[in-house]
Image 1 (cartoon, one colour):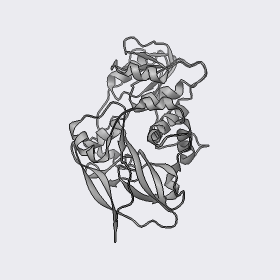
Image 2 (cartoon, one colour):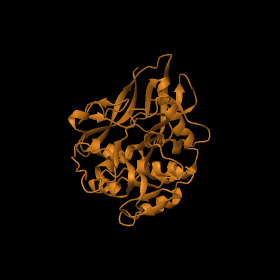
Image 3 (cartoon, helix red, strand yellow):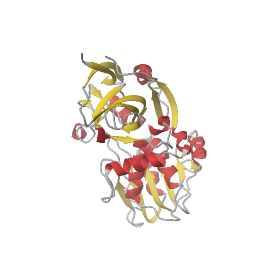
Image 4 (cartoon, rainbow, N blue to C red):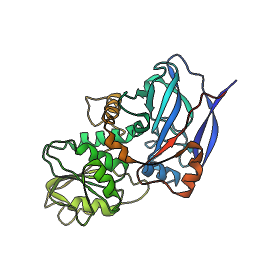
Length: 322
């Protein structure tokens, strides 16, 4: 008898549904995983849900275990924590870049063990913290740098939390939403509105996905300063202010993207393992701002009620269905 699982599919603009999907019989080098939690990356998954992935980026934007093709129908997602029920790592809690699905079978080397010091419910942030790690490898901040993070979403807050660990660095989190001040306080960093943000920065990490945020990021730089662009704009065109002081201050604007490991001496597995180790710090709990049951996802997504940071999906308990 073919086993099956249940998975969330994006079916049209703003619409999704839970479908039964076949579950492959695991081979000797595969892991059968029962999902405990998944996380919704609000920015990217909202873009996919509305069909905003441009055709030129369809292959680049594919999630590792995505089914279907953009725009729809597509099974998309990459923040998944579960327990191995068959295969190598039997009984271990693991993280995998897998969509929202109750059970799945993947090669055992596609999962990363969650350290005992990291609760499974927090480990859903591993993909986000991995992006932040890669960004800082690209940015190469120095001791004592003056740094701002513009955009207090999941990735921006994760970057700010890591920057707060650098000696002599007191990052400021810049956002238009005053409610982000509470998140900044929980992370132990300063908060500022765009108008109140301190200039003279050596480094600005931009993650607001807005033209206004990018413009403000450039304006906050000291001479020879750098903006690291983490925002992904999908099919939107963005105006960049390269006149005025851009050349006279010798400013730099560079991109960072998690699809490429920013250090040639590190592998994807090493980067993910580092992200999970960093999640032992309970300060990252501030990035989880909502939770719901798996069965409630279609109605939640249709209503557009996702919280601003990470929305955690709870799968409850269960075993592989027949």
